[in-house]
Length: 268
Ligand SMILES: [Zn+2]
Image 1 (cartoon, rainbow, N blue to C red):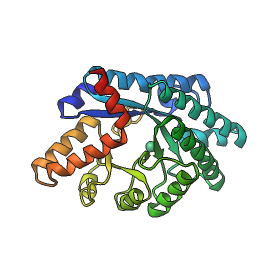
Image 2 (cartoon, protein in one colour):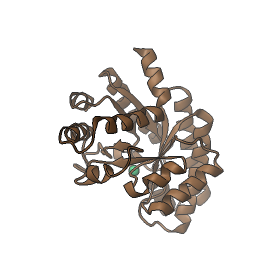
Image 3 (tube, rainbow, N blue to C red):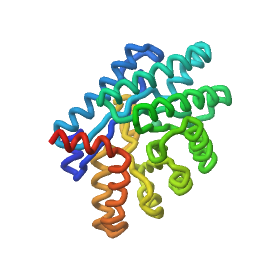
C-alpha cells in the first residue's frame, strides 16, 4: 500500500487503529487491544521503510465501547476498560511508537443517551491523557453539524486539551469553520464522489483523509490513499484548486503532526 501511495505522489500517511474484531479479535479482550496497537504501529513502520512520513494513531473505537455495554458489561466495567486502552495508548505515545490516540468519540448512529454519556466520559479522560503525553486525538463522531462541534469543544475545554490537536475525523465541510474557530481540526473525507468538490468550497482550513478501511470484510468501503493522492493531483491539473491551496492543507497536516515530522527528519 505504501509503495502505491508514494508512486501516486503521497508523502505522508497516518495509520489509525481499526476495531479489535477487524483483526480477528474479541471485543473487550486486553491482549487483543495490544495486538491491535502493534498492528497499527507495524503499518506505520512499513510506510517509513518506504521513505514516507508516517505515524500510528492507536486506540479503541466507540463502537467497541457500545458493543461491550450492549453485551452485558456494566457501565463501570466498560469505562475502566476504555480508560485502560487510553492509558496503553499514552504509553505508546510516551515511548515514541505512536503519535496519537484514536479513534475515540461517539458512535455515528443513535445508540441512546446512556451510551452517548458513557462515550463522553471516556472521551474526556482520553483528551486529558492525550494532553499529558502531547498526543493528537482522532475522534469518530456523529455528524450533527454545529451541535457536534460545540459538544466536542466543550468536552475538550473541560479536559484542558491543547488547541489544534483534536481531530474531528469524517468532518462535514459546512461545520469545518466553526470547528477551527473552537480549536478543533476538521479532517474532511475526499474519497467518495463529490466530496472533494464540496471540500474545495472551503478555505484551506482543514486536513484531508481517505477514510480507507483496510478490512477484507468491507471491500471498497472507501477509496484507498493512493486514489486520494491522485485525486488531489488531478484537481490541480484540472484547475479546480491551486497548488497553494493544497500546500496550505499540507501545512495544516504538518502543523498537526509537528513532533512526528521533526523526529522523522532526525532519523534521515
Ligand atoms: Zn471512524
